[in-house]
Image 1: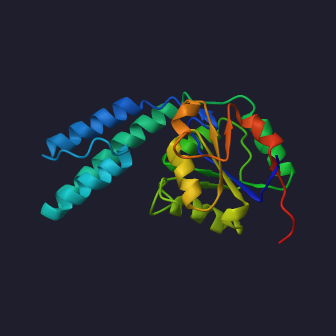
Image 2: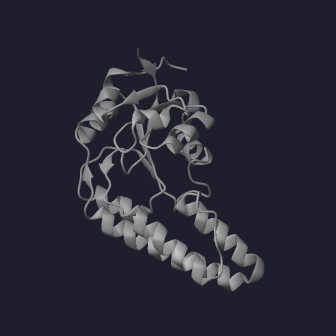
Length: 220
């Protein structure tokens, strides 16, 4: 099977790099901060959505309190992300795979909920071919909202139907499907069974496997 594509979008942590992010600490500290502000968020939410929910609730009562919470929560996230960036390392075969994709004429985008300084700190240590990076600092809505992915293809001048979203989390697959893209799940941090309900087009164990599936589309 060969999927015709113009563009491949990659998640970052757990997809291109072996993440050293302490997500448990990040979540614990943000929840503690919310508690100090007298707010109990919905804990089933992802961390960015928890911050947004608490900020919204606080702003409804006190604008400055909401802003102060959001600023402190962001400081917590960035601190953990920057520490993790210093310990991250590329997953096997990533650099060579992205180089080969670029040689085939495909565009490469990195779409991540991470902050831009942390991503740039990692990329400063490694040679990782890419055309575009869109972090949470660069967009109004982050994945799993498909707007994050759609902004990437817009900036690269292509269309969702010629794009593949590759990620290690079910949210990556959901975002890609809602954006009208093909999707590939990499089973590095999540087992194959975790993707059963989101129905990726491909399930792979390593990034180099993509080279067997990706083809270049006809001129449109």
